[in-house]
Length: 271
Image (cartoon, rainbow, N blue to C red; front, top):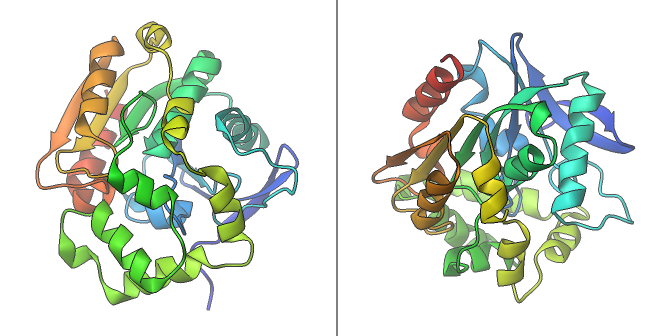
């Protein structure tokens, strides 16, 4: 049976990169988060079919999923940023809008800050990119040690709705987290003490104030991974931004509020 998490492979700056490339129209880049066992498909499988008016590209960022893990990789925001631009180059995309989830939001901001002319609109969802005191939830995510029980606990932290935490989801995400080489690279990304990694993903207030992109900021009010206050600060600092907060929603906005989230994003892109 074909694994839906595997799309097609492109050479992005010398890195064999797994990605999903669907549709036609204005290009949209979807950037996943940094949870253990994450892939572009796991993050965006419920979003891809709803953005059918666009060319949607969802890569496994280097070090995650089914993308190559170079032995000499130095996992840090400049490395991830350069890889994301290399994905666009490999696909012949000069300018695109970006939807970034959590870590992916921090990556989206890093891309917009470095090459503003290559970014159209930004959607930041439960986003990194601003300094905040690391939450116990995020510390637990980045400190993950593989076991089914630990994966169940982490999925429970991501979601407000406990019905999402099914045995099947736990099994799939646990098995993804123990693929050969995955835990070794994941453990090397965010070693303790982990507050420094939050700060390394953050842009300065001066840079955020200087962003000219239309920006939609989305957050779950009950997020236990990235605090709502971080998105409130981003909204305060980014001049052309708007903030939408979903009640009874955790860190997985695109899953727990899928229909509303996709409609909100599609309307924002269609303005």
